[in-house]
Length: 267
Image 1 (tube, helix red, strand yellow):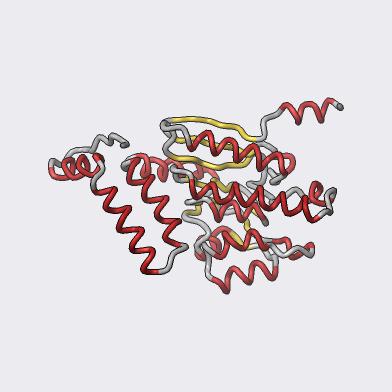
Image 2 (cartoon, helix red, strand yellow; image 1 turned 180 degrees about the vertical axis):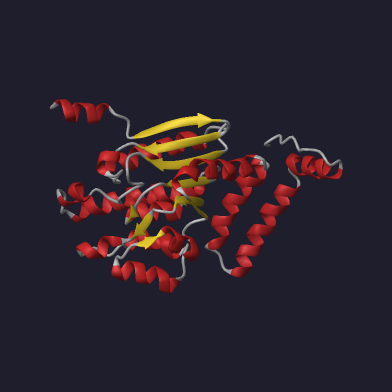
């Protein structure tokens, strides 16, 4: 094995940093634009599972090293495996990781400092929240190479309007961060030197809330989206009743009445 290949093999695909209840997971293949190879997907999913089981982790920030957030799947790796079975396994693996983002108890914030294309744009769409620099760009560009971004269309169409999603999918053209914000793909757009401070403000707002309410609310939000109207209300009412009997709700009401800061028990 060459020195370069050995160094790459020994470098973690994902870096983790913990600070005050916020866990930052950084995709660590900047030289490859953090492409979602099989190894990257596996490493990211494994880290997400570890964070999900960590009661001290309240918010997750998903970031990318280097100049890009994520350029989608590794086209070189895909090209080396033309078999349908291999391709299906890759997309299934990626789909499981994407869905897991919505099933984690913690809110996940995408920290988008550069381009997010194809499955990278999908990754932004599947995070609960997304903050980007004003120079970031987004595209579902597979159609330019003869591959319609079918899997990315799932997350994209659940964030932006149908006509806008189809335009991106059919043309493969880039949109800028202000356009992505206006279309609903992003929550906030800031200058590059304000990105981390803005994410911290957003994280702090979540950290100030009851962990029980956040956990129950996130799970309910995604489950009810896939229900009919009656089923959505039935599910929401059940979850809300459970939340209303939690110790944190009693604490919140008492703190409100006494005009003091609540002390969340998290149970």
